[in-house]
Amino acid sequence: CLLLQSCRLHSKRLPLSRLPVIYGHRLASTDSGSSGGNAAPNRLNNASAKSLFLCGQEFESDDYTNLTDRIIEQVNCGLHRQRGHPLWLLTNRIVGHFNANYTRSRSRPLFTVVDNLSPIVTPEQNFDSLLIPADHPSRRPSDVYYLNRGRLLRGHTSAHQCDLLRQGLDAFLVVGDVYRRDEIDRSHFPVFHQMEGVRIYSQEQLFAGAKDSADSLRMFDRSRNRTDEQQAGHSVETSKLLEHELKSCLEGLARRLFGSSIAYRWVPAYFPFTHPSWELEVRHSQSDGGEADWMEMLGCGIVEQRLLDGCGLPNRTGWAFGLGLERWAMQLFSVPDIRLFWSKDPAFLAQFAQPCQPGADLWQPVQYKPISVYPPCPMDLSFWLPAADASFHSNDFYDLVRSIAGDLVEQVSLIDEFRHPKDGRMSLCYRIVYRSHERTLTSEEARTVHDQIAKSAVTRWAVQIR
Ligand code: PHE
Image 1 (cartoon, helix red, strand yellow):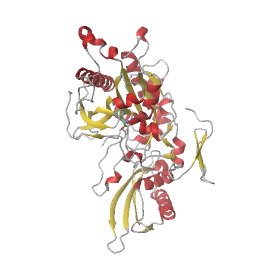
Image 2 (cartoon, protein in one colour):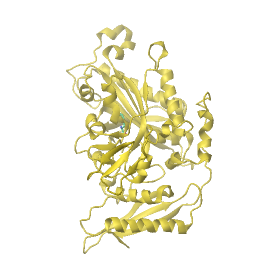
Image 3 (cartoon, helix red, strand yellow):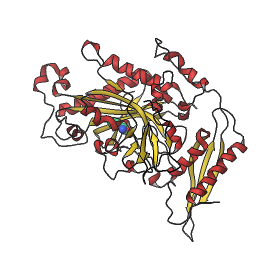
Image 4 (cartoon, protein in one colour):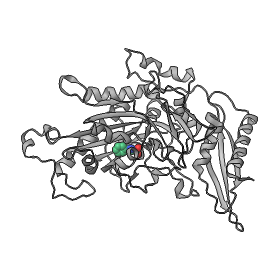
């Protein structure tokens, strides 16, 4: 699965519909390489539940509305724009790398950085403009935060590709918060940050480096069909050059950030908006000294020509990538838990302050040192769904847990489910692990929160606690 924030093993019991939603997925074989400010507060208008306020705007609710207060509080958080925050530090290192290596005439940066676009987008922006089919699972309300049928919180920064291309940008980086309904654990959080990179070329630009033969090379060759390696109508040279430019750009970035001895590999992947597509995996050693693991760091590919045609750019070709900033930052700064990025604890933020000072060296090494580790407090909750045909989605339960327990919940997982042999009702058992980053939770405290969750589940879905 490719979800830039997350990829985890699911218990065999889980029905397929529980797999995280994806904009693409990995293909079977593996080829290896070498070693914005919002004035009014956001709120759900609970009294009438007819509308909600987000980023200073009012939105009518409808049958798709599924935002929770917890999510609403985090919309437009702008962590990547807060100087001193680890995501700010990472963003600035990446932008610094691009600016140092890609320039126009008179050393002007080639890539335009866009970091303040509203996360509220339309289904057209998030899906249709990217050729994501109408029946694609990534559109389901169980996986997306909808304000209403016409607006949603972007699930990826790719949502802005077409708008920016239509505006005439030919090389850009988009940084922003993205939202996906998902389970909760150390590497999953329903809000995270992505950076999107897109570069498109005219024929002259693409072959500018090919000196002698530049005049004879053609970007398009109508006789060529689509294969695993290339798009229909792209000449062989175009396919090869774009792939080379894309991969060397990203390999350069990975080496600059993680060191030149980093081990990485390219894995073929699928996205509706690029072809061919790949994921970049980087090897990292386990902190417990166990076997080294490959971790997917980004998704990328050659932009579908149909997408460029749709943006009025039929005589351009190009590439795009999207990377999850938290995932890179966790790896780079040894941050063990994604929820730490939301911490306002000065003991956390202070560890990143030094390289973020104006004029300081952004690249001075930073390694997060855990402030202290408090014990986890796991508790199980089992219940019967009210009827054999009751519709219930675990993501709704995760959201309920998150809105009640907030940051005290470290992980929620479905550990057991079975159907009553006589009346056909389902029984589900969730394990909720409570843990605080600030103190040791007493079992009474955890119990109080746990009881509240049970009560709300009863009110909301008429479940019967076992
Ligand atoms: N938007 C994709 C995702 O979030 C990543 C991606 C971006 C892939 C650009 C290809 C090109 O999963």
